[in-house]
Image: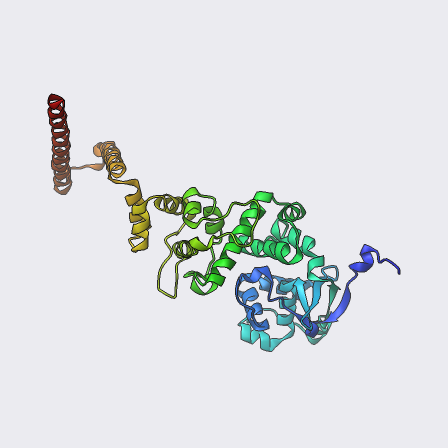
Length: 375
């Protein structure tokens, strides 16, 4: 039996466009629970992944023959596992009815002769698990990088379905092992939560944009780790959430991304400072209770910190604000009566606050003296 050379193994063939299918498992699609139709996949690619730029390039320059698609025979169809944007662009250029359905009306017209040149495309037929290294290097840290969720979905597929260790994946795609492990743990936690019915990120998150980084960053924080019982990175597991903590993980997801089925907005607007504040709030019973009854992150964070810290912070902020105002008095105050009244009220309030603080000090001293006499 003659062994084929790498050049022969990866030699492209011309395949009619009508025989090619877009990949419902494409990590770009960012759907953890759905398997979409061809039009739904194309619509997502068109709206979110700059297929128009690819289409304009092909219309002007033709399809470069060296940019072969990778495709695999799956479920009786030839599925493109690498090159979905190029296939989508070619289909839109060739099919006027499809352009209408996708509302892709700003694409250039192509002549019948140019359409004929796009009847077939160069395709390399390989199994999905045979090209994972190429696809991973290109899209995880390469020139056409995916977002973090797409990377995580790809890493999970290679580990769970292809059977590669996370260390091997990290080495192949040129990423740090810890980063790969964090992405895998977070993705599998979402899969586990959906299967348990506590949170479905596709159906429940309140914003179109999926901030997956909130999760894989937050799972490194002590308060969030303790609250969810999330597993350590080593050894990796495809079920990182303990059963007894599944409800808590669902709560965390709602605070991270909201729940549109219950009209709940996410507490995390930006990672800095909100994710750290959530982590700290979860470390106290009061902060957790405030979150659970819907008082919001800012209240929960203040409850966690306590009145002593808030009082000290309030005094410091007030002093800094007054110092700033005094620095502008010569150029900013021209004798307005309302501003004189305002500072008068501040003086009165400051004196009352000082008297309250002095009374507390006096009462504590007297109490201490009485206790000393009894001894």
